[in-house]
Amino acid sequence: MAASTVAPPIILRSVEKHTSTLIFFHGLGDQGDGWASVFKEEMRVPYIKYIFPNAQSRPVTLNFGMRMPAWYDILGLTANSAEDEQGIEIAKDYVHGLINKEIEDGISPKRISIGGFSMGAALALYLKFIAGLTFDKPLGCIISLSGYLIQRSKLPGDHKANLKTPVFLGHGQDDFLVPYSFGQLTYQEIHKFNPNVTLIPYQCQHGTTPQELADTLTFIKTSIPAQEESCENNEK
Image: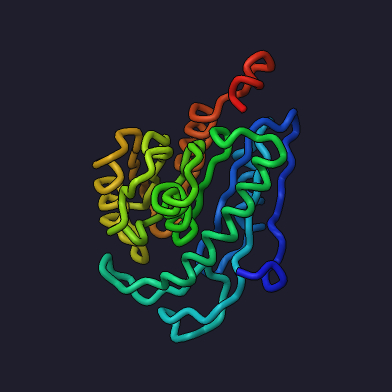
């Protein structure tokens, strides 16, 4: 993902001292500002800096080759569909750059979290548990809303850095695009090697609910609590 072909991320600065960062990936056809507005109004945590990257526009096979913002090409909607491995790897490298920049700016890897919606959630799960094969620092929590696993045959890999990461899976029971069964499969596969995973169903289709947002906010605050000044140097 060349930097010159993608809009810069939307950034919400922390309103207090910056001690944690959350990177959240939008879904197919969306942009970062959509979720930025949700977090700004309903899910703001004062010590967290939020980064909402924008995917570049690309032809999407599933949508008859129409161009739209996408982290990678989608070739099918079944659990066994072929996957765009090259596109996934390009997205991984781009996001690893964002993570490394936060570390260079002094944020502990353990206080950098990743999340997303739909294909953005799939990318977050990939980055945390599979791309972790090449990113061996323990990171913070992971949030998957209406997500699914990509490259799941590579789980759990050889690295152990992210095998205890708290994971929140929220999924609509009536989701017709990414069926709830995908959320259940994601839970089952992750739980094989990481017991710190929670799956909560919601009464919605391919979207979110006020309760899901509230539960997500609680999960973030619990997983990445406010950092005491006296402990700051110990965690970095």
